[in-house]
Length: 161
Image 1 (spheres, rainbow, N blue to C red):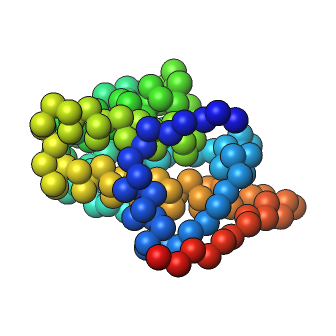
Image 2 (image 1 turned 90 degrees about the horizontal axis):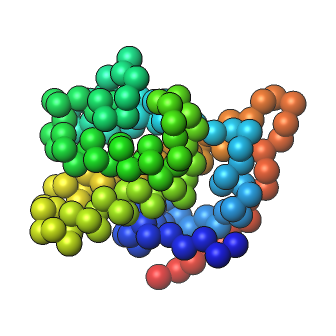
């Protein structure tokens, strides 16, 4: 209740256009028994986005080094990683992360760079792509329940633009 996201609308808009509108309850999205951890999130993002955009060092013990210097936008990608870590209240690299704080972190990075005039179109697209993949990955993680549990129902509404 009272949760206000600072994530840019465009992350949600891209998700809506490419996948369809899906309404989730906060309880479904923030299910504490089924969460992805920080390290695993970045390993999966590297797999989905490619090593050129987001090369990851899976053996690192610090969030500052999860994205290697070989990234197309190393400073932007590393800042995104650090903000995701902070916004989720992580203490260790294997601490869990959840959807809303992760999207808020990406929105914060984007907004910060826009204010400074340091965000070009390709950098903005990188943040958007990370956001789209976070939405998909965290939804898949939420649905990955043990065999003895059925997935929580998700009300779906169709919206036409």
